[in-house]
Image 1 (tube, rainbow, N blue to C red):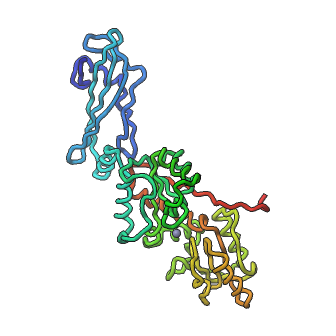
Image 2: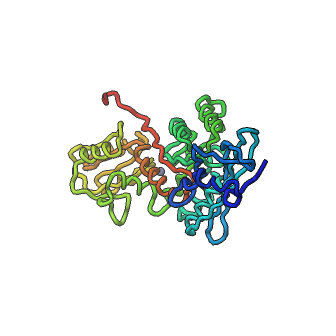
Image 3: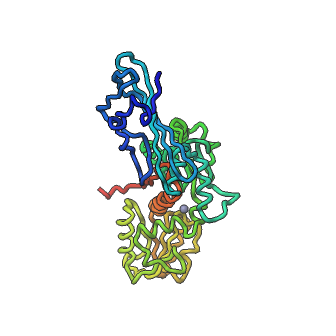
Length: 371
Ligand SMILES: [Zn+2]
């Protein structure tokens, strides 16, 4: 095997033109891969015989001062002797500090799920709680991440679509295994649980829940995404981002607007459709208390879901007793979904090594009259 330096070795002088060294794939001015070899490359080996390009590889070396030196290796096979020979090229790129750190991270190429979680903890802006459901539900922290999918609920359907899109880390707002604590002891032999867990294991996926701290983030990540999706920034009460002011829109029109903007198939409403709405509070997700509906300063409440024999019955009784009030029940997934779309945008501000994508969870319900 002969080793040549294409810039310094006489026998390879001509190669710099035949090998298309200029065509380094780049992103934002940073070299992200190997230079392309011209298809008509006809390099010569030391004996002057033609060789065909076979394999190429490269090593990125970052020197101090942000100068990237790329050493690219090209392997050629002597056409006559079928003997491999090596070519070596060297390139230097002056990089900005930011680009240099990006390259450094790209070079590392093993962003683990644990490192993603550490970055979330560092960027979320609130102290990480000792007691929290925001933990890994499946997979290990040392798993290398190929891509990140954020979703409202890590349903089997959502994780299958994340995996098909090449994302092996799922960041979910709601549980994976059917209870707030994701306890699986009673599910070990259950075929649905087994099917889902087997899928996650087989595809080396990591599921991380991001619930408590996304709500604790200021402003609340879910509320921010929902307000943006509804285009209600101008209606938000400056004193309370979960409260919105309207100019007497009817309850029916308000519900229709939400149905259209959030593309909901099966939402439900309690109250008179002609009720004029001026002040409404949004309880995105599960509403576990009667309190928000009791408030005399609000004429309507928006929730994801509640028990029908608790808040829903209380709302019906309040209206029957003569109060002018409305309750809009969106369904849990549509009531928080846009908050996890916003989460993908937020993650992209500090995770650049792997693709981050929002994978929507499907609304589970359909209506027989919807056609
Ligand atoms: Zn929530």
